[in-house]
Image (cartoon, rainbow, N blue to C red):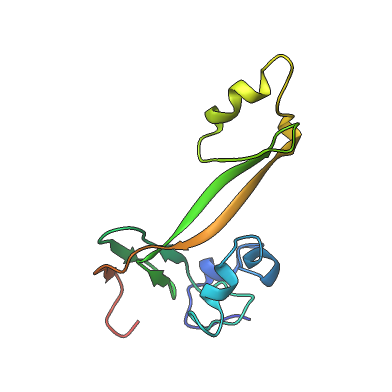
Length: 136
């Protein structure tokens, strides 16, 4: 699925396209790019997905057909299942050190998963700046 309007260096990098399987790895991304969101067809490699977050954002799209949403953000957490079955969600891996090195050990490092989620922040006035020509 090559787009003749996109620079060749953006299209010809192997493995750089967003596939259905890739989008499924991030909760909420399939909905963001689907019919109720940006409405693109996967696989897609025509640009970047640029997300903002809380507050007012100034987001600059460069080359390609970038998808910009200033109110959404990518939340990445570590989900640790402790030996007693307790589930602990943290943003900083240092928060798991005491559990891994406790005696007896409370957390096997093999029981740590990465959770990626697209979150929606409060609506704000966001500004998108494009570096290309008006017709691009």
